Image: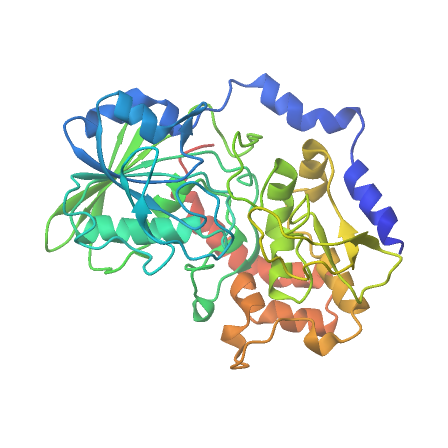
Length: 426
C-alpha cells in the first residue's frame, strides 16, 4: 500500500461535519480546570508551613508558575524537586539532571532524575508539607508517574503530609495495550497497568496506595472525602500520613483537553500527545521515532525502508540534541494532522499497524529491535516499553493486529476492575 496515501488518509480522517465532535464536547461543557487553579482548596493546608514542591514548567495557574503564585500569597517554599526534563522542562529525554539553585526564585532544586529518584531525609528535613503538581499524559512509560510513586513513598517514610494537585489526562478517555508483567519492571513501567491506563495522576496516586503498590507495604489507610478533595491517611508503625488529592473541576474521562503548555520537549502539541502511546514503541527499535523533526512521535522511519515512503531527516534541535539517525535521510510515515482529526483517527486504541508494517518492510529483521549487550529479554528496551516480551515475539511471528489485541483482553478486563475503584471523575 502507498504509505504517502496512508499518511494523507490519517491526517484527513474524519474531517467532515461530524469530525467537529471533539470541539463540540469542549464547547458544550464548562471549561475544564486543573486542581492548581482551585487555590482555596489547598492554600489553608500550606499556610504557615515550609513547603517542598515537586514541579516543572507545566505547574502553572493560567500563565503564572505555581511557585510564583504561592510565593506571592506568602507561602514559604523551602525546596523544589524536579523530574525528567528538569524543573524548567528543557532537558532531553533520559538526560540526567543535577541539583542546582534556580536563578529566578533563588530556591534549591533537587533533581529526582539524576543521581537519585527519591528525596532523602536530608532533602526534606526543612520541609513541613510536600506538594506535587505535574502535567501527565496518561501513558505508562511517561516517567512522571514513576516519579510520583517515589515521591509518595518518601512522604510516607519521612511522615510528611502530601498534597497532589490533579490535572486532566489528555489520553484519559481510553484504556489499551498490554498490561505490564512485573518481571519487566523499570522506571518506564513500574506497575501492572496497561500502556494507556485511563486515569488522572491523582486517581493513579490513589490506586498506588489502595492496591498496596507503595513500599513498604505493611500499612493500612482510611479515606476521607470533602468538597473537591480526597484524602487517604496512610498508617504504619510510625504514624499517620495524609495524602490528599485536590480534584480537577468540570472534568470527566470523555473531556477533550488540549494542554496549555507542552508537557515535555518532544511532545510539542496535541497531535504528538495523541500518537505518543502508539509510536513511542519505536524507541525500542532502530527506527527514528521523530525526535529531531518538527513533529516528534508523528514521524517515524529509517534509511533502509522503501524510498517511495515519506522522506525526512532528523537534525539536532532543542530537546533532541542527538536524535536517533541524526542527519540521515529516512523513509517512513508522517502522521501529523489537525489534533481533533487525529483524536478521532486514533479511535481510543493503540495503533500497531505502523509498527507491524515497518517490521515487514525492514530488510534486516534481526536488527530491527535494539539489542542489549546482555541479550536478555528483560533488558530489551522495547520489552520494557511494551511491558513484556510477548509483543516483540508476536511482531516477529507476523501475528495480526487483531490477534495481538485479542491477547491483551483478559488482563485489560482485570485492570479495569481495579481502576474503577479509584476513579474520581465520571
